[in-house]
Length: 311
Ligand SMILES: Nc1nc2c(ncn2[C@@H]2O[C@H](COP(=O)(O)OP(=O)(O)OP(=O)(O)O)[C@@H](O)[C@H]2O)c(=O)[nH]1
Ligand SMILES: [Mg+2]
Image: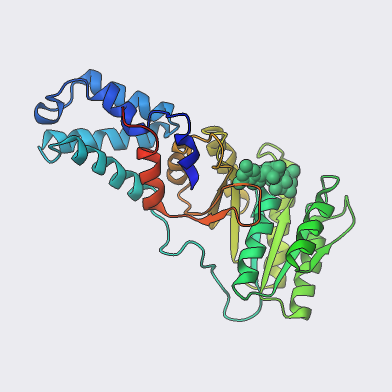
């Protein structure tokens, strides 16, 4: 999964880099780390996009454990790193289970910066929940980008689910409203709303997103029941800042991190989880309908630390 392709070309694993650069002294685990080893460990983690806060916490913790004599072997240290990273990534027990209202359709809004993979993710989610028995209806509330409506309609046709759209250039909140009306009329159980890509700095577009949120909430109490923020896993630390302003417009209930099939440095996932305090729900692992995986913190931590060669 995620980082398995990172192993191609016999790249040194994160663990391999820590071992090579921070465990230079064979006695480190007995006597405690030297300042230079701690710095080296910090550098490795920062280079892997963990961000300052996760890096500091991780290194402080490991240093303390070593000092207390709790980590006696390289294997102990490796497991401690995996455990801690997994804890930092902690997700709901089943991240793929949606928060559902007691009656009526579940409304899932999908938002994010331009080109992060929102529309593709909407299609993947639609296929997944349809397979599990949901009557899915898609709403093409990206009226901003030319071609966006057709892109979603094409996916809807392929999956075999209805898609509600409006005029290109129209009001996305009005399309969302129509979508919910249609969902209620047709007895849909899950409505997934695709929205236009926007930069967190485009205040007008952020206000438009808030309006979509308000309008769906007036039509169906508690909607959107889920709001997924789609982040591009390849942009590293930039995604953190982008995401922060989205959380002020509509508080996300989950993150979907895409494009982790490529050369993405997965450390950014740790930074995102930590900075945003929002659970990761799914990973995007390719362009196809099946390339969506419910997030598994433990497995992700293991791959993040161990994928690649050791030395
Ligand atoms: N490799 C890879 N490509 C992806 C993934 N998700 C989406 N893409 C690709 O990224 C590009 C943009 O995807 P879209 O789904 O159109 O992105 P978007 O966020 O809807 O874009 P806008 O609506 O223009 O903001 C497309 O070429 C997708 O095939 C993924 O998980 N892995
Ligand atoms: Mg789109």
